[in-house]
Image 1 (cartoon, rainbow, N blue to C red):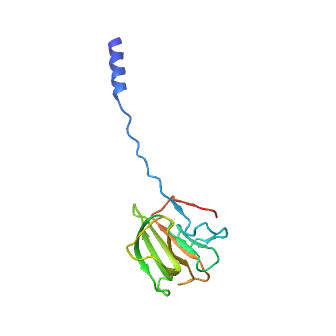
Image 2: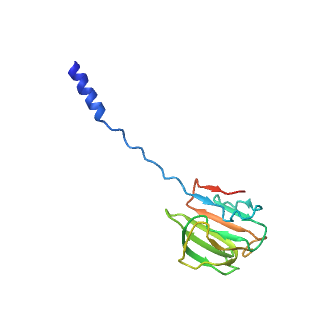
Image 3: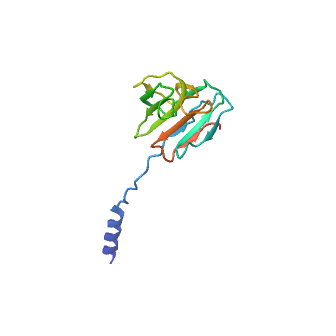
Length: 151
């Protein structure tokens, strides 16, 4: 009996638990307007866009910054683009994530450029289907990400 218990304890002591799959946390992203101004606000979610926001300082020409590092995938400089987005940028990030920024007054980056988090992309405008100076920012592939900043 003692031999059996010893053998049983040896078998159980060598068993390893199944590894538990761990989810990679979503990156923390910044608000696309730097906290250099105390008065900025998020005005609304865009028509059915669960990961899009309209944000403004209330002043055309304020900086628009990248929420994450990435590469410029697409730039539109036509203020009357048929999409209604006006002048816009699509920025590609890691893990199939992208950021769309629209309604720029001016875009200061070029296609294919590597961008760092917080880098100025251009300036808040009122191009496209827009009624006031603001930035519309859509996050693609960012489910469960957090926005941080002084809001």
